[in-house]
Length: 203
Image (cartoon, rainbow, N blue to C red):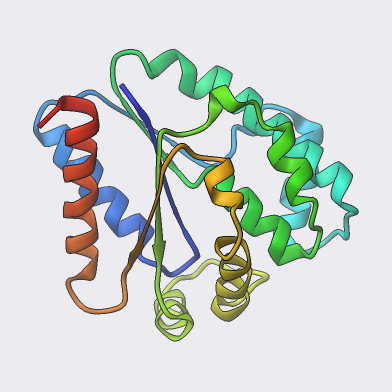
């Protein structure tokens, strides 16, 4: 069974699409395993990552890159690898979101991060959900959570990463989908479902 990642900037509608995809496979009786971006299995790495996400600490690339790579390795070994043999594993954010974070914080260190991630823990397919910053910001305004980056800053960081070959270095296959108009989320979810069914089940 392949390991699939679903990526997207805050407000892109990724969570809605994720729920549709997981609901489809679960209602069909398919075994699924859902994980998040981080494993949080190292207190030291967690402290650095959370601080960077909150904008509360300024980091040079090396410690943040090392924390992200170490967290990802532990996460894969504990929460992903044991399940990939017999079920669909779907990560809600993964390595590309780590690259987004490095861009958004200005830490950089992209090549170092990519070089540190073991190739064996990369997703077979990564679906990236994008939308316009205005639409993302409007969606975020309905949420209670506080973010240190607004939608425009998040979209700028994502565009910076997506304009390079970095995504192709942290996933075997990249598919970018837009979610701007009413009904785009259902179209994106249907496309993702069909691609997973083809890759996993030969449908």
